[in-house]
Length: 140
Image 1 (spheres, one colour):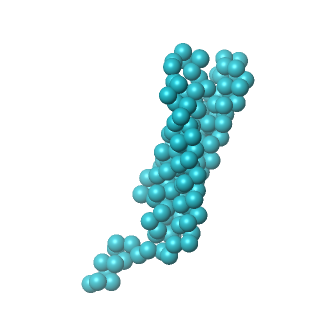
Image 2: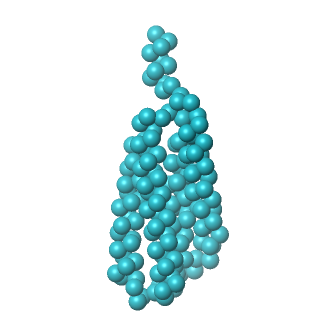
Image 3: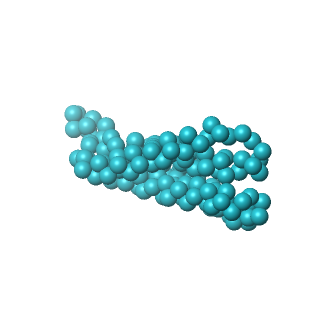
């Protein structure tokens, strides 16, 4: 699971850089300044939470708690829902697509971010749990 979060975090960070460059160069002048600012918000939150995913992946090398994987999952799903819906909403006129359904998804993604951060906080109060391998060795 920790490698999955490291890989996902790296992938989301990579795409945040690509989308940020796309927004700065290809979208400037193609969309209204408000839409570009909205797009940049999606990129910024994607990057923050990509770094959070990498942090969760690294923490999982030292900490064994049941909440860390949940924090990582919520960050990943939050990126897809929050940033993904913001990208669609900010580009709807350029792409000429109907995405009114995406508006209510944005706060769901934001809520997942908040819960993910709360779980990360609470995980710091949990005792380290022994891994399956450690328990099997002790029982032998």
